[in-house]
Image 1 (cartoon, rainbow, N blue to C red):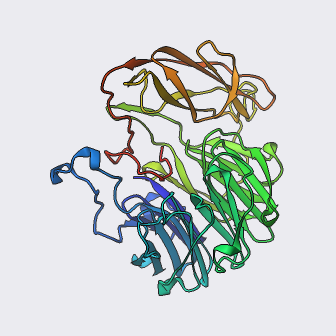
Image 2 (tube, helix red, strand yellow; image 1 turned 135 degrees about the vertical axis):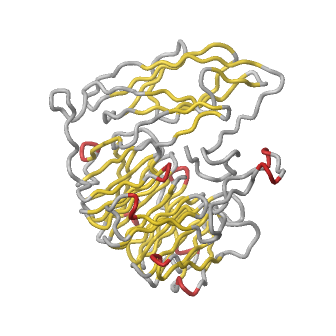
Image 3 (spheres, rainbow, N blue to C red; image 1 turned 90 degrees about the horizontal axis):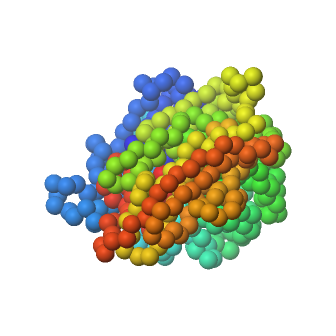
Length: 458
């Protein structure tokens, strides 16, 4: 079961949330898995919204109910979690498992709440994704326990994915397509939010801002965007060593940040705006592809991160994984090859074809293939060669149309010195049929595809 977000208001309390309305609480975050206690506020045990015995056709199934996507704890006595089904969970005593549940929106549809930030007990800000009338909204309250939320829809209905408030007067929200929104008065209505530009065309899924002043966000190419003046639209971009979606960012101080991605990688820095060389890359969970009738699933993703201070950080991800460290910014141990931390020629460990492996079936003349790859050696980029085409710079995930027939994709990583690593090649074929099977892919715990507007959970 995946955990999507975590918040630690102190060294004595961490709260993580995830699928099936899971709320996991620990008063000793470094005490191992037995120190965490899970509960399910809406029902006594996990349930799914679609079961075979209910006679519901598989095509009409949806994701498991109650996916909690974000949590923020202002103090040990106030935690707020938001759900993809539009619910907000509030607790004044999370260790007791007591949560009140309400909805901030009474309009048509349900807001897909994707992120929340509570800089104090007197302000909480939540954001919604999706493209419907309930999407692109900012929800604010000055009294979280009262259950009264103000709803404002931003211009252009951005697909908001995360929000972070340094104080009650400065908030930054990030969205798909690299859009960033800033407000110096988050409760002042939609007019108080302005777009601070799009420093990257790739989706932004995580953001963290700390007072006096630093904001850091991550995009779909493994790049970290930092600014010491987010209200001035000044964001610098640096590749932290990865090539996949940054899913969570946390900065306990203005000089220290940690980011995680959906490939089980963690990148750390003691100088976040110092450029690519200021970040250290490490893979915590190696990628393993699992073949099945429903495609392939990635079970090593990390989704959230929270640092109480520079001496305690907690990460959460797929398969209910929780990592904790009391020295998160220490330099990683050098590799065994000559005492060097990274190879000069980085290896590309895998080329992953999403939704198929060696072959794909289509009833059309073309098939849109999607591939995923990465390097554990701190590569600064990748090059791809499709069939007999020339080598070109690329990033993961790679999507392109292929015709019916046999094909080959070659990928190699580029090291920090510019040297190219060994080539990894995947041969596959596209087969034409009159009726193609479903192209949907599913999560490990579900038999159905992701609804439109939901961020991918690979």
